Image (cartoon, rainbow, N blue to C red; front, side, top):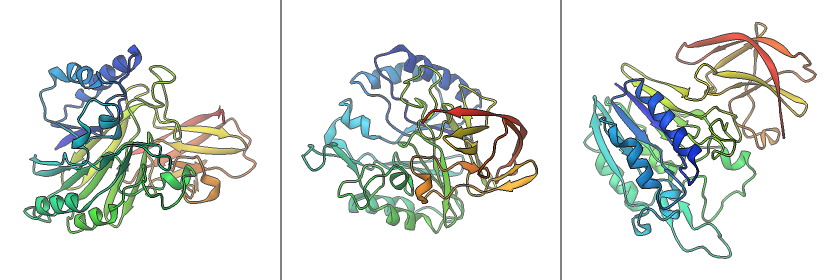
Length: 337
């Protein structure tokens, strides 16, 4: 079975967001998916839901939606529903689960944002009941807007142990514990506007970059704010195993780039994970440690070249964990800090 996950469209009053989403949808449907999952944050205006429905009106496959923070905070869905809209669907021998983890409340001086993310007891009970009827051999796909496992808060310098966190889910470990018994299981997320792939045990966590990229700030070609991913979506195939790849509707042929940031050089593999192998001129290079102080402000999918690297082009070979390869000569690109 093939399905597509897309997230963080951020429709607004300008025309770029609408044109960009239309281009994204056209590219997605060319893959002939059997189902779509929208990861949330449709837009930032009260009319976003109407705009979204109009663009999606000709789509004939099922579409699932996991609510993001903007669904409630931008006022186009009732705030009293926050954290209650969960659902599941069996399709193509796969069990799909969508969780609503966003909670709305009136802002205070201590917590200026009017929302936080939480997997509370009612959610955990609902999930346990839903999964109780599913055999452990059935592939399970879970989606919620904010990642169940992430280093994003640490990399972006957010305080630890926030009382009302907005980038990590309170109760996430209990959700992951309920998924452990399934032989094939992944979780899909957005929110962070970056690609970040890693495993918790055998569960693969896939955070996917935004359709909006850097909130459409650079128009139709607006790369991700931390990972420079060209805007896109995730194609997932479920068979004897679960395979996925990130596809861009802006730069469909680009999977990797060579970049210099300040005095450091990186091979940036937009959909790379700790199981991706990167070779430069035939020699393996290491992925950055996401929890290192030196990784502050960076995405996880970077492989750092040795200090003193001063070439303007280099031969790179990338092997993804599913066996896909990407190789060629890359020219160095300087990026602004």
